[in-house]
Image (cartoon, rainbow, N blue to C red):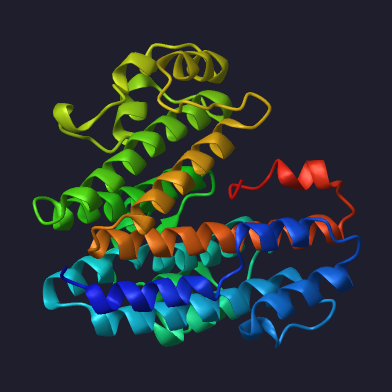
Length: 334
C-alpha cells in the first residue's frame, strides 16, 4: 500500500469530525444555543464559536479546520500526487474569486464571507491574497493578474470594462470548465479511480448546467453546447446530447429519472439535491475503500466540504425556525 501511514492519519482526522448520528442529534435541538453547544461538545476544534455564532463565524471556523487538514495532507504526498492534489483544491480558490466577483458585480453581500476568503488566501492561495479587500472591478482584476482566470473576465469585457448585461453564470461556468478539464488531464492515466470520480462529477455537472439553462435562461443550442465539458464518448455514461433536444427542465428531469443513473432518486427533493446525495455516497465509498491512494484523499476533502455545508444548513435552519423535516430535506448526509 503506497500510503499506509497516510490512511491511518486520514482515518484519525475523519474520526474527529461530527458523525451522522451527531448531525441528527444537532438537527433535533430546539434552539440555537443548545445546537452550538452540541457542536462544541462533539468537536473541540469548534470551541471558539460564540454561543449564538452567526453563519459567517461557523463557516470560517470550519474552513480553518479544513485548511489545517489540507496542510497536513500535502506533507504526506509524493511529487506526482502533490501536483494532482494542488490542482484538486484549486476549486476553493475559484470559490473565493466567484464570491468576491458576485459581491462587486451584483452589489449583493448575501452569503458573502470575507473572513473565510481571507484565511484561504493567506494560507493556501497567496497569489490572490487580499482579494476580499477589492472595492472595484478593476481592483478585483488586479488581484487576478497572476492567475489564468483573468482571461476569463477579459473575454467577457467590452472596451476593457465588463458589460452591464453580463451573465454571471457564463463566467462561473468558464472557470469551472478550466478547473475540471485540467483536473481530468492531470489525473488521466495516473489514477483510474480518481479519473472515474471526476468523470462522474463532469457528467452530472453537464446535466445540471443544462437543467439550469432550460429553467432560467434562453440560450441557443450552439451556445448551450459551448457550456459543456466535452468528454470522450467511452468515458461518459450520460449521453448529454440526448437531453439537448428536450424542451424544458421538467422533461430533462423526467428523462433523467427514466435512465436511472441515480438508482434511489427522491422525487420530493430537488434535482441538484439528488445529485449531491448521490455524489456524497460515491465519495464515502471511495474514502472507505481498502485500496488507498490519492483518490481516497480527494474523496475525503469532498466529504468534509459537504458535511460542513450540512452543519451550516442545520444551524441556520434552527436559527430561522424551520421544522426538522424542512431542514432534513436540505441535507446530503442522509
